[in-house]
Length: 301
Ligand SMILES: [Zn+2]
Image (cartoon, rainbow, N blue to C red; front, side, top):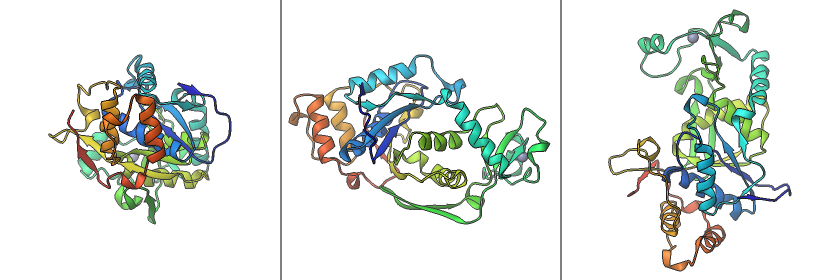
């Protein structure tokens, strides 16, 4: 439920689920870690629905996710934001990058690129093009990346770095199907909401240098990052990729299981009378240094 809290906090965290299905255990972990860390630091915690890719939106799932979070006892600050309502912000960021001549249109097809290389690193075929060459509505827009190393200290995974020109190549900020890219929209959203701390899943660790680079180009401050391990099944399947990724049932059991996964091992179901007790305990005893420094962990579901 929405908490009324208008005081400007020094710590501003967020949880940003995609409304492409129910809230499953994997997303509960990201919600819990970002929430406990924010509240432990007496910070604000915001919710954002990442619905930029309308083709992937499952009807009513945003509402289901909010309902499940509420049943789990999460309390968020401010109004829930929706990426689909922020297109003007992404557009002005894109124009800023275009005007700085840091971007160029690309008409390469996936098939064409695949034939050139399997690495997924864009070979720069369209780098010579300028915005004026873009009379084709079907072109994507790529950003030119530097050859300097981009490094940051992750609060859980510790040091991480990439050389974007070698590891990634010029990446897409606007897709040829006329959708702002995930990388651009997330950077603009975090800036617009004044987010200071990003706690999310390990699968986004390798997106972080791209996001830091965009923050630098746009003159945005860089948040503190923390990437929690992914929950996988015994067969090494990511929970979110399971077709039947089960909707979670918000019991004390589920919450304690999630807290254990996040390294907060001392909790026991029997310690708590209800969900409120659980949160009170977790928030005051939360220690991000106990979250395992791992890419993934098996979870029995
Ligand atoms: Zn191209």
